[in-house]
Amino acid sequence: MKSGFIYSDDNKRYHTQNYHLRHTFGSKVAKISLDAGFTCPNIDGTAGRGGCIYCLDGSGSGSRDSLKSQFEAVRAKMGEKWDTDKYIVYLQAHSNTYADIDTLKAIYREVLGFDKVVGLSVATRADCLDGEKIKLLEEISKETYLNVELGLQSVFDSTARLINRCHTFDTFCRAYDGLFSRDIKVCVHLINGLPYETRDMMLESVRRVADMSPFSIKLHLLHVLRGTPLATMYGRGDFSTFELNDYVSLICDQLELIKPETVIQRLTGDGDKEHLISPLWSMKKFVVLDEIDKEMERRGTFQGSRR
Ligand code: SF4
Image (tube, rainbow, N blue to C red; front, top):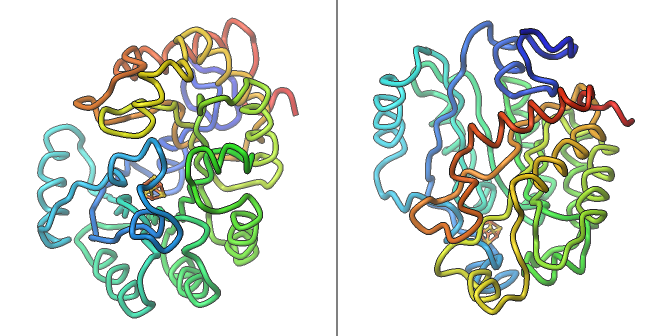
């Protein structure tokens, strides 16, 4: 059943990444996550120590295999699941612009040279982007499909301090403007459910980011993972995590605030199931996405309805 939303071929009432990639490349594109062995200024002591309070070592695979071997291994696994011959390499672990320019150049060029790779996604932090790095990213974005993923999580500096993000919203805005003004596609990450954030604060983060017209947005659900400082806070009862119904309702409100042309890359978490303490319902990702579809249909709204 078609939803009638301008950027959808099916029942979706928001602009999915799948829709965007199919319409850009003409067929299914799969994202392959690779660990290039970077670290993060929030872990190595340059900006902070211990990392963000929810971070289980930067979502890295910890793989010491070469990028090529990692790529081939994931591709072989994916081949069992999806019939596709187009891939975007996702440099996801830690901060993937946190090295000297020659190292970055070599890594980006290497992965872009892998068989059937049509683009690159680079996850990083705003404080790991200077003029020289932005220039390199601009160069690459002129040659190929490039997405730079910036972890913001919240526009509130009080929350940034609490989660030990170790950079301010102003720092984020400077890096964002540098990328945006050079026509580099930026994906902004936000997290719903951070300790002591109210629903209004989460809506405000989305409102302010949406007004910056990013190319895409990822809305994450906070996951409490065993072994993190966040798990200690959760164990003490300092905060509680979302119930499914409240989360679905918040996401629909947020989608209604985002411009229709902004691509939605994620609407929930996809955390490490082995370490997940809460919320356990989030393990059923397809149920969550289905509930979001149903709620938007029930409301009769679409992405951007309330703009
Ligand atoms: S910026 Fe990312 S990798 Fe670094 S500590 Fe925070 S979550 Fe972990």
